[in-house]
Image (cartoon, rainbow, N blue to C red; front, side):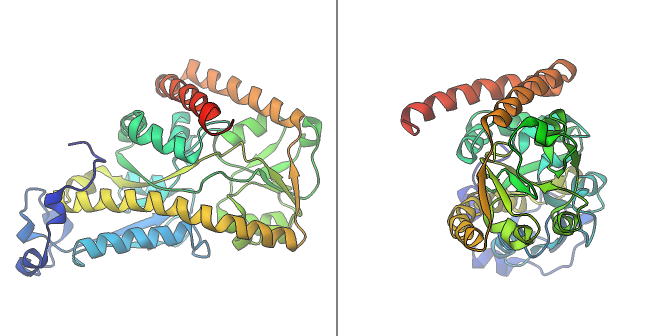
Length: 363
């Protein structure tokens, strides 16, 4: 059975008779055996660290939805308690916490951790890469999940796509930037390989969790920041600290967020709970994208009405960024077997996806 295939009919068959048969024992996780029958399902309590402040009701709200779905499908016997960034671990250390086993699972984008392995960027997004729909197609049907599974396994975790913000914006700037020369020495918060690209263009790249961006921007610790799209950026108040809002968001055209699970904790779960977990992740992956697509347009209207200046990146900056992106990918491919293997198949998929979109959508 593939790790992400849909919940089987048998798993959905957990009806009232099965739940009534549960013994009500408060079994500890260490006592759980995957071989248990459905009538012996234990009560399991997990903690989920996240990279998000609670104020972001779409991405953090999706985590709450995920936990609620698992709870409901299990009849309240498998509960997952989410924690906002900083409550258990800092927002940029979620994968580390899951890997060590200090928490059973976490919700975070894999590209936050490219310092461990640059190929982790593929799990989220690459500059000038795949749209949200293309990213899902690559993950679920183009071999992406299988490729990322092998990589995640090196860290002792499993990863399940569990959200996508859709295309993001290009970032907030305190001053206009028209040429690559204007980027020199600029202090900007931008993660993943997008940060590597900007660094190659002379930007002083900063790594900050979402909860710290506004104060850093307002107080001048950074001059620019890329976060997500209009809805979340409005929630963080970034428009109050910088007035130039750049587009297109070539750094993150369709970023996926994963829920990561400690391998040993996963193996201790009954298979029925594993199926519930997979199903909840798939549902949230769809719903988060739908929510952002529904909310971003209205948020952008409000931002513009409040005085935000929408500014397109110049051709000079975009061309330099695209060239830098390709050079960085080739450099990583030459140095890292993990990166090279995923990059080769990902590039073939992207070429085919772009060709189809040019014919069917962009004409």
